[in-house]
Image 1 (cartoon, rainbow, N blue to C red):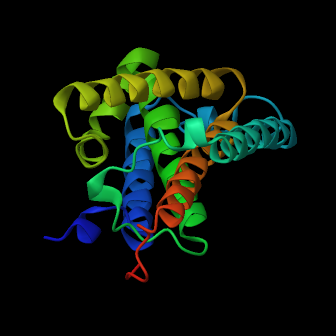
Image 2 (cartoon, rainbow, N blue to C red):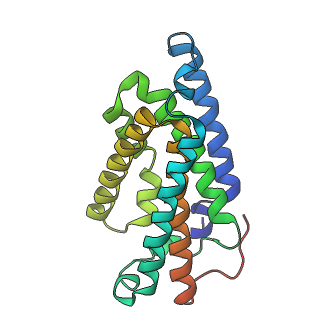
Amino acid sequence: MTASRRTPSVKGQAMTCLLFIALAIGITRWLHPTPAFSLWSTGMPVWEQVALAGAFAALCAAGAITALRLPGIRDRIPVPPALRDMNLSGARPLAIGLFAGAGEEVLFRASLQPLIGLWAAAVVFAVAHLRTAALGAESYPKRALYLLNVVLAGVALGLVFEHIGLVAAILIHATIDVTSLLVLNRIMVQHGRAPARAAA
């Protein structure tokens, strides 16, 4: 199996998103108290959630632009060999990020977190990222550090879900993923390592 087949694709991320949402619907329907889907719509009004997520996106964009313009920072951002064949052209980063944000937040935050708690849901979230850790880090200590960061991100997203709402958690998660993929793509292009064309 080639590296490009092991890296996330739009089609693969869409299928994972649909699977996660189907699991979330099943878990919520049969294991949550009635009304089953009430927690999916709690929190601030949707427009406020979108506004807060937009502010977060602006901060991420500013941070990414700053990091990419400062050679001292940009040159220290590693591109793992397993991700060098990943096709991040066009709208792929946006699609991958949105699919990941929607599917993962609906499953781990809206469906599992009310049943098993904030920290347990964050750990399960990290377990679901074991493949990403293997792709993104070559050594076990780096993989462990990555997974610890994923647990902490899961806790932060869980708090966003609890105090702000599901829409904000989805959009913030998508922003983190899209920003990371865009930065990765820019670094690969600057170093001449971006693939010319690959299947989605």
